[in-house]
Image: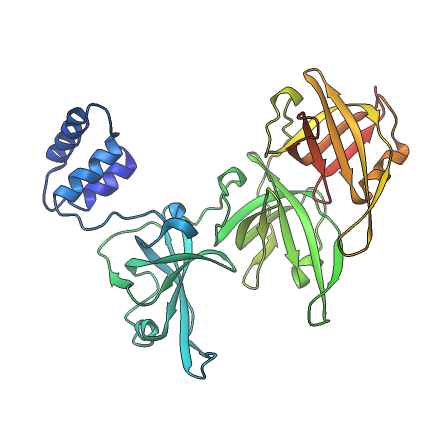
Length: 371
């Protein structure tokens, strides 16, 4: 039986045997002439048997999901904190980290809901059935518990997934992410000025495993991490987001980063130019077959910017590549016929309707003499 259908059956297992449930699901598919798949049929059968709600796995919770109900095991509990609202009243907030076999998620309790923590009705390692509203928070997707929501103990044995995710498993807006990956590019520490005038540090690093690569942004103390290319890092409790079409990891206040002795294999995967698709972030390899003129332009903030276009050709075709910012400096020691490798370029529609690749500060580009 499919895992999702099995989960639906468990919600009505006290009312029907598994044999009868499967028979009713098959009958439903047959009666509808193939207009519904077995999963939809299982939901319909469960509804007919009186199932009041369908449970969602944590990995499937998204900000746009609307109210969701899920079961998870409590991994961590915060203290209750008071805060002042704009109207002068006092509010209370606390949070839980809850996990199932597909992932973990932060659950935020507001006002009266925090009484469950004060009274110790909620405990670490307890399984809870939670109904709440997902939203996008600072650490990814979170569940907010307020009016119209509920938390109750669940008689279930939930196995929390604690092993790290593979990079290919990471999706936008995920929180509580753990990964173990190799440092492909350690990046450089940059200083920036906050709105309040204070100084901060930021560093963009590229990590890879046997399923792909991803950029991670390190802030302040994390940015000063002593790390080199080839080191393996374990990153605990980070989040993901999509920015300018690129999926990236973000560290936060509660992120832990440490070196690991785990063996991680990584190799660059290149897409043939003929197989490029609009919107994807790609790696390509080929030869430098054209160099355009360097153009200067003015940004919205009045500063100057630069862009230059090159042509890259492989055995399947040719593509125009735009190098933005200081990337044009890489061409100082390059010439036509040089081997080119581009990692982290974004495929777009060009002016003439042909595909082109845009490369910015997140991209990595190398030129090497032929031979």
